[in-house]
Amino acid sequence: RAKKPTSATIIADFKITDFRRTLSKKLDLHLCLTMLNSHASQLSEATIASFQPAKSVGAPNELKKVLLRRQGKDLDTLFTSVIEPYIETRNITFIQEADVRCIEGVMLPSDSVRGVKVTLTNGRVDYIVYSTNKFVLFEVDHSFMFRGTIGVYSIKNNEVVLSYINDGDIIGGHQGCLSSVTGQIIDFTHDLTEQSTIMIRTKQNIDPNLLAGRYIYVDNNILDKGEYNSCYEIQSGECLNENILLHLGNSSLIRGYIDQKDFGKGYVYYVAEGMKFHIPLSFIAK
Image 1: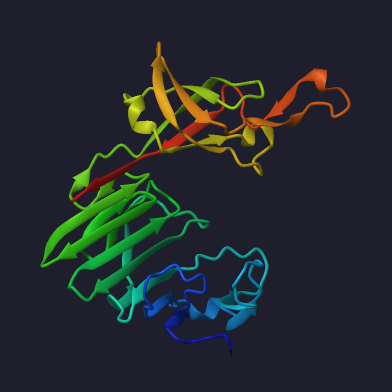
Image 2: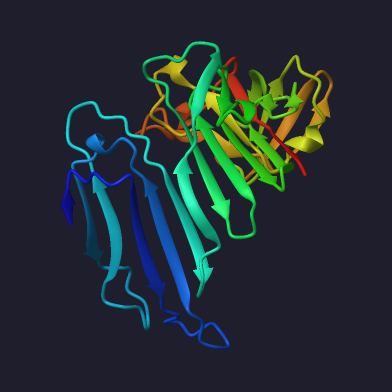
């Protein structure tokens, strides 16, 4: 246990026990947590604590966890960690915070950005970048450009072996990626059903088949319901005239009844016609 830890990294290596005996042979299993702590003054405490897991046959009475704390008012913390499962020997040799510089755009006081550089034993170097403002262009470690929400950029033998971006349009030499589908809701399923749908309209040219497995985020703040979750997994999509019909499976859009004493008055919904939405897209190149 340490109060106001000053180390640049906080590392905890857990030995994993196969208490359910699912493996055919005994293995030296580990789970290593490495937390970057370059802003050490932000942490008030770091400790290894015990907690009781859910009761299950053969489960241990208690498990260990890493507990990090900050103290203050109106806190907004971006904790950054790398979690590595491994057998006997680690595959990661070094983890450090990558240099991220703003090249174009304006970072708001509430915005955050973080880059992590992970060096593997096989010589590959992985960069993982996260930004709360996908409209700002960054240069990462004097190596590549990034503009988006999440990016992964891997280099081996001075060659780029993987580029991945989510909800963004620039990663390395790949520019002009479609970051997301945006528009407004035209209609949605109003009844209790096991097959809910949302009809959307967008000005972008997008193949509805590419939306399967992605998530639609609905901006419902205009109805003062921003505290409610309006994010739904898209099972499939299809063109319907100039609109796109999204099939959501058994995800209900109903929040509750208008009147708990009179069900005939109908429902209150998480979404409404005219609400704006966005569907983050991803791009990967190997």
